[in-house]
Image (cartoon, rainbow over all chains, first blue to last red; front, side, top):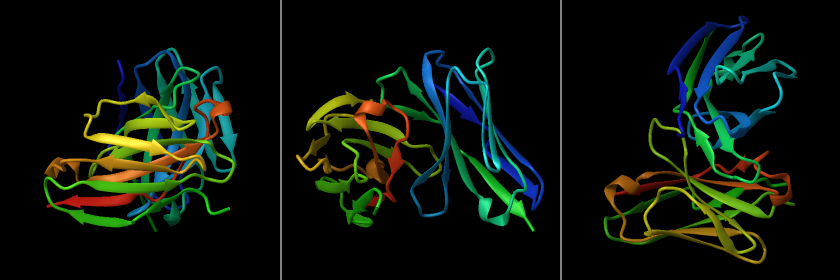
Length: 112
Length: 114
């Protein structure tokens, strides 16, 4: 089946770390993605991880993948007010599938 | 590089009308996918075009159709509009030879059906 789930809301203080979690159900997922959406805007690709990796780090972003539990997380270090947005987790199915399955998004609020 | 562009940015239609949305992919990309994002939800896959053919399709009725042109740009057509078709329509582009990785999204077209 196809299902990606995320918590709805996260509030953190500026300068703290944020951790956004996601669970997925399709064990054949090839890539797992994190996208950011600001109000009234499209989706910005933040990072993605291939399913045979456990971790990927890109500047302030760290992605952790637990394939056994089908759990993906995005950690944002030193969170800034400009990081306030909705974050979407997504999976693709198989090597040649362009169909991304998205979660409903986690709204991150960064308090000054 | 202009990235993925979409037009128009906003559109208001009435029930039963037809609408055409347009997308130009990022330079160097040859594959275009369309998504529908209802308010408060994640995007849902409509279909994907490569080499001017529909290659994959999500769970959307035949009222949703598309086209890809030789310059890789694409159109999404929706016939017999329903109130429930009100949403943000997103176009994503990618390179076919890179599989599903690195899909870049445009800013979207906000469609309101009255």
